[in-house]
Amino acid sequence: MGDRSPYPTEHMALLKKINQILLLLLILTVCAILYNKVHKAPSALKNDAVDLESPMEMEEEIPVVICAAAGRMGATVAAISSIYSNTEANVLFYIVGLKNTIPHIRKWIENSKLKEIKFKTVEFNPMVLKGKIRQDASRPELLQPLNFVRFYLPLLIQKHEKVIYLDDDIIVQGDIQELYDTKLAPGHAAAFSDDCDLPSTHEMVRSVGMQNTYMGFLDYRKQAIRDLGISPSTCSFNPGVIVANMTEWKNQRLTKQLEKWMQRNVEENLYSSTLGGGVATSPMLIVFHGKHSTINPMWHIRHLGWSPDTRYSEHFLQEAKLLHWNGRYKPWDYPSVHTDLWENWFIPDPSGKFKLTRPDS
Image (cartoon, rainbow, N blue to C red; front, side, top):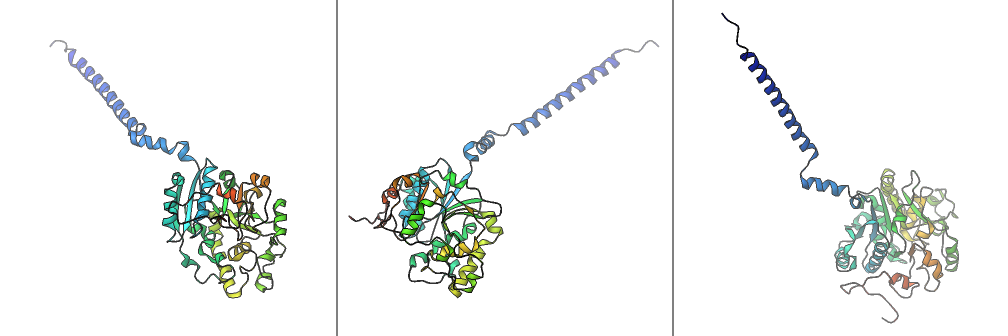
């Protein structure tokens, strides 16, 4: 019997080495496949990811709520035009109207140079006000349903933490981003302009006999008002420009509180439009007393509509960031003051339904 042949042992060693190489290649292939799946998404998905992270998409949206009332839509358009023209910010306009007014304002925007703006129309249901408004014949325009939109901001605007509300009879001359950046103190749901905040407006207030304290808005002969413990000489504020925190508003159930005071006024006549501020301001003065932050005074220069004769200096108005024609004398009507500043931003109605009232018209 001779020595065994060496070939079987060498053959087994070779096979073992080949198997090791194949296993290594298999592992490398699997790793490569997994790498591709995790790190190399299809091009469409990859492009989406890039888009989501682009500066334009990540820029914070500034929601601005403004109403479009029948007969006043030119005001809404001028306000939007002034805001849009004076900012690079990412503004989203929420235009609130009644069912029969929304088609008109939408058509106006879409057929004018405002067609580039970002906007949504929101229908306000006036039935939410049923039984909550005391009729007052002296200032019927103050009882229009859209005057109360500001009470219901969290119900109308769902996805934003911070919101700007503006009356329609304003124009903005500054960058709306500045107003949006207004700081609200912890626990405050809103910021307003105090009526005693700017010495330059005091002469205007005195000259037209306007009230700028709670005495001008609430009936202190009523026990319910005296029970509030608010001094009648307390400075009032104007809710025509609001920077609001929706989370605080909802947590504090402020809409319910405002409705409560509307209901009490129906029953007890605690305030009325024969007093200084009408029926929309007074509940807010009660509910937000001592619980609101303040807006930079230059971001709410008001009373331009209180007199057809009394005027501010042109230099003062040029410095102002926002002008407000609160009062009876509106810049789209006649008589009124500082109409040239307002008309800079007015865009004629393509349908011809809304027309300016001028002495030569």
